Image (cartoon, rainbow, N blue to C red; front, side, top):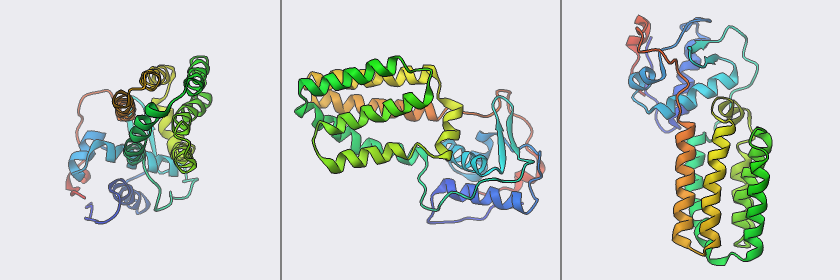
Length: 247
């Protein structure tokens, strides 16, 4: 079994395509267990976040099962969902884009914020504190917070752009990812990070607002980077997988 090199496309899509092909050709048998995430990353010569995005794509499409604390298995069921569109962005790509845009937005918002804007942020934080166990409500309030920050600048294009980036999280791919990592504790952490952003904006401190937004997005990426592989130590790699080459 060999993986071939493919250029020009997003790495996680290359990884997903190669694994999907092996499953469809029967080289990866239904019910068989894949190597651990870290081992796949080493064999393919890519980062663990890239492997994680590829595996989530394949689970959303119905090709694999990810069992927390156990491992990753080729699915027995027939895939139910179509392949994700070619231009679909993964969560880490989205977070990088958000960092470029929203850090600058927070900085400018701190220069322009008025008391009524801060009051809107306070109202959002209060509602989020009451909704930490409701994932869908927390997600909606998280979006609202970032849109309110963008709204301080009074630029319709920025408001729409920030909102659209957050709307990308309302997809089966992100729903599946969230099912592993989002919970009351992660939403509480996000809320407290929002509070730091709010305080910097209220203090009219552009540098602090930019830094607070960057810290929030970096911590969001760390939360998404938590591994869903088995908790046990390294296990033997099946012989067929030892022939895997890098992307």
